[in-house]
Image 1 (cartoon, rainbow over the protein chains, first blue to last red):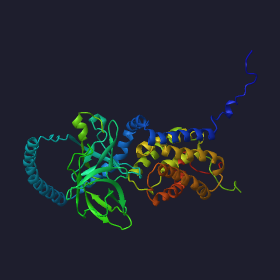
Image 2: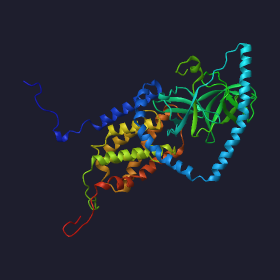
Image 3: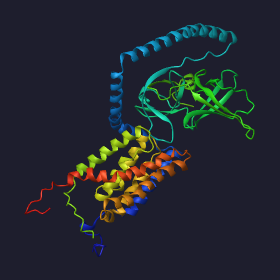
Image 4: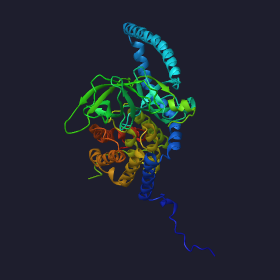
Length: 293
Length: 173
């Protein structure tokens, strides 16, 4: 004898699957779990890496109109413009060649001095160029996506620079691409050295009048800081090699009621340029490990 | 009276056209997102809501969830942020799909505006609660633009279902 006495399932015509409210609760709970996991527990990393590789063809397709437009723009750029650019570039190369010759000499001198003093010699930094694919569309943070990833040995935490100075740091690595958080992002900090006074500070990204800037944190109101001071990386974090240009101080606000000065600096890097240089994190190359500290 | 409006009977929908339209709006949304302008509308949200109203059996919350995850990865936002707002949008589309289409298009727009605002606010609340800053007031424009796109969606997405109107003596409609 069958256990069920009556067939209680609805006839096929009325079968509509789960109730909408059940589906809403299920999918909302799943989304919130993902949000929480992404923010706090970091267990969504493989999921994100997989999905980002999956959507790569579509991403490539979406980038094509912009590429075509810029290619057309370059094509129609007139000869005069090209010649001016060339002249400027040549002038820059000339200026830099003087400096680079000095650098050669200074490096030898420095090495000799270091040997004399018995100091550890500074490491040569390995680097690779990468092309900026697009700015991350998320309006809440400032990141760019570059076309080098895990397969090209981009390590998590690698510093990224361009012709002007430090751009930021690699914060997410996917198989074929990686994400760079700009130094003007709210959560991005760099230890810097004021090259005029030698004072060490820490910066974080901040907006000043709608302009992305970096802010110097915890500087006493009486500290010796002037507008136009050059900030370079101090190298004590083991990530950024020492001596890279970061920013120039542009706004100083000293108030009596706060014991810290509000100091803003404008970054020297182009930030939204076309090509960047990805460096190996200095601590990682020193330890010969692929991991960021 | 409701029946006094002249309304053409629609042909059955092709599932391939639904898939194609969702794919195209996904691409458009990805493209518009690249410009980083906050006020630009989320075309994909309009499409999901539209098919949720017109074809609730075919485009439901599962589709909305998967497309939302896709947008999260593309935007590099928190995973689940767009997914949640699309799922909520799709739920409300389902809950009002029997009622909405009886109204003229202007009143339809008035009724769907709150849901687009809600979808935008859900995304905003998730980001604010995880410690991000408010990105700017222009983002509140986008639900209004999405609502203005509703007649456009009606025109484009129902186009393959409309039949050519050639009334004659034997066929009054």
